[in-house]
Image (cartoon, rainbow, N blue to C red; front, side, top):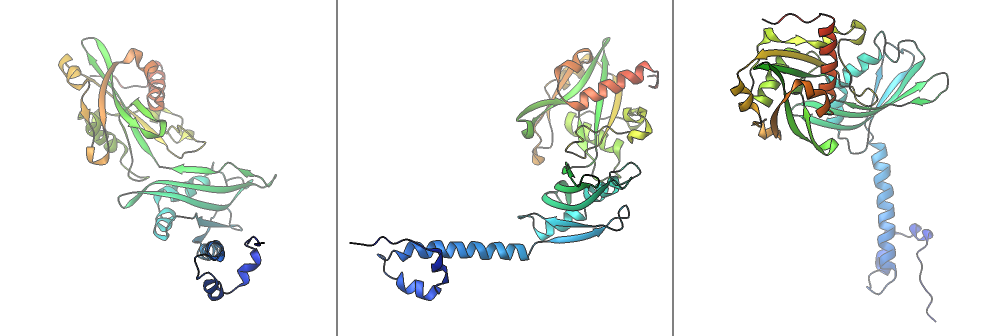
Length: 316
């Protein structure tokens, strides 16, 4: 009676040359077993090699001089991406924020132990998006606090109010938004190139690119400047997962009815950058009800409160 052959873990002790000789015949049951063993050993070697080549960097923070912070690259993050990440304005600003007067490390109750760099998206030569996980420990309990970060940096949005024939209209853009799986009506907006970027200049450029409207620098009003200084005069849409800080600007003007008609349904955007934009002009009275865009709703809220308290400059 034929004895069934079974692979055993003890076979891993056989030399590869011996296994190869035994498996020379296609009928040999060792053929499949050799493949399994080779794959297991190769996988183990790959794991050990990956572990030994793990990319790390150690930093010292003035806010916690006795505790070093280890920055680690997750599997799949290249050496160049890792270096770009830790040298980026996004990461440097985050480190600055947690060490600020009101930052996470300010009162000594929390400690940053490790940062795992998980993903880097380059916009040309600069880091556009950065994904990382920070191990922040509550010293009293020894427990980690939620520390997953999607860093994209500062941005700006513009609330455009156009008066025409006694009625006020708002200019919105409709763009395909893959993260939410559908198009969204939004304020014209854009990211700043760095943390010391030109907020108003970026706003004017983004409005022209997305709507075709050319705005004057002197006509722009910073709505977020009306917020209490303790806020940093910025709004933060999603502090539980994203570092984005928004400056919200206001533009008010008067136009002929023909301008409203020309803007309605206009297709714009930088096609070479994947921007597929359609312009919508909607009555301001209904604006707060027709879009889920946080930039719209925050701008309307600040605008209405600033108007109520007489903080807005008079229009010419």
